[in-house]
Image: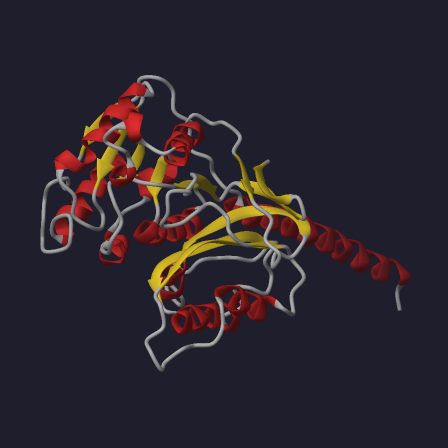
Length: 343
């Protein structure tokens, strides 16, 4: 073989490989970029919060206490057209709820959107929402229960942080008569919106599984999470800390939902599992399920080694603190109790 020709044929190849490697690095970095969570701007005095009903019906009178309180925090409040609107159980027709939420997503003067209540209905409009302006200029979306649909959809598709918290229907009408935990959890919404680093504690539970891990926090209502499986709003749990809560479900139904999470791989690569409030329906006479909530959960995660925390203050209960979905936290489960802290 001609040595000169042989060497000349190798050099371009090596340069080509180097070029391909460099391009691969660029492509990899570009691919990783969308995975980074976007934190909407935290609110400043004078910023505006919009109130809308993407799910269930609520009256103006029922949201008035929340308006008074949010104004006392230094924010302006805009009430959407769906407040007071009613279409059977919904806060207006699908089109009315879609239009109201869309206008708030698009309005640059609205810096956060508070969902007035949960119920049912977000799934009926989520696929028609246009998030293009929201993605370019993100804002905080606030709520829980049925609003889990929006948290999961936004996190998985647009990588924007949201706030899982109480809504307008949870604000007390008389703060002087409110329980301390009610005041504390409502105030946690203000703290989250203003950008305070959040920190939460849960009492020791003998069934907790000890450990310390960090990861992006994601989760919400277990029934909603299950219903999103296989859709483009499906929750993404790999390398994340998952929190779940629910209300009004039988134990056998909770068992089935946890089996769904396990069989779909949602429990396999977690960094941690947080179990919040579960208001369980009593078994029908003669139809007892025979397992507790704790037994159901621990059975589904027994082959994994991440920390598990029970009795966390989130869910359909007074102790329902504002959680920043999509934001990195450290979960530390010890015999002294459990701590979840924003990084």
